[in-house]
Length: 309
Image (cartoon, rainbow, N blue to C red; front, side, top):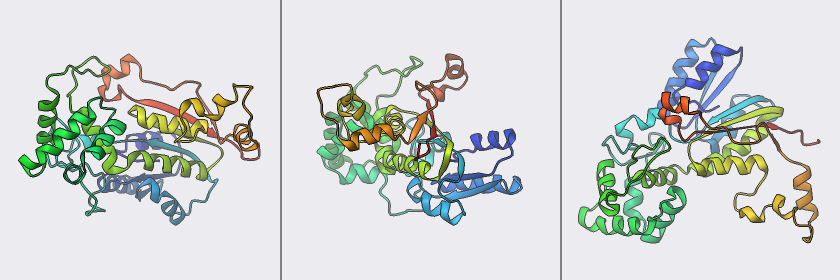
C-alpha cells in the first residue's frame, strides 16, 4: 500500500493482525514508515520507490505474484507535501517552485520552474489543458512564456500564483464546498502531475497491483481529481486508456450491426476485475465539513478475478 502520512497504515495495524508493505516515492514519507516499522514489531516493511519501481521492490521484499491479500492506493499529493512550503506544491504558502515528490532521490529531475523555463507555448498549453483541465490554457501558456523574458524565470509559488491571477483577473472560481478557489489552482495541479508523471505512475501501479494480488484479493483506491479517477475506472472496467469512451468494447457490443472480433469478445468474457461497488463512493457532507480536503475524494474498490474463471 502507499504510505503518505501513515494514517491508513496505522488504522490497519490497529484493526487487524496483518503484514504491511508500505510503498512511497517520497523520502520524507519513507522515513516516517521506517519509524512506524520500528514500533510495529515486524508488521511493517517500508519500501522507497515509485509505482514503476514496485515490481523490483516487491521481488526484493520476497513478495511473489498472486500472493497479496489487498492493496490500498492513496493517489496524488499528500497533505504532508501540501503543508510543506519548501516543497513548492501549495498556492497559499510561498516557496521554491519545485513540486517534485522525490527530488532528493532524483536531483536532476526537472522542477516545475524548469518546466516553465524550458517548454514552448504549445507544450505548456497541452499540459494545462490535459492535466489541469484549464479552459484558458493557451492564454495562460502564452503569458507565462512571455513572462520569461521579463523575469528570466519563475522561481516561487507566489510568483506563479500572482502571474496567473494577473492573466485571468478576478474570475470567480469555487470548490465543491462553494468556497472561493484561487484561479491558479488548475495550473498548479497540471504542473505537479506533469513533473511527477503521476497518471502514468498510477496506471503502472494498478497494472502491478493486479499482478501481485491473489485471485479474490482486493484493490482499494482513493483519488482526488477526475483524471486520476478516470485512470482507475478504466483499469477496473478493462477499458484501454487511449480508447474514446464511445469506442469502448462495451459500447460496441450494444450495437448488433457491428462485427465483434474474437479478441473483443474475449476481453469481455475474461475480465480482470470485479467492481465491488456499482458507482464511485464520494464523501458525505458531514465528512467534508469535518475534513475539507476530502471534498474531491473518490473511492473505488475491486476484486481480482481468477484468470481461469
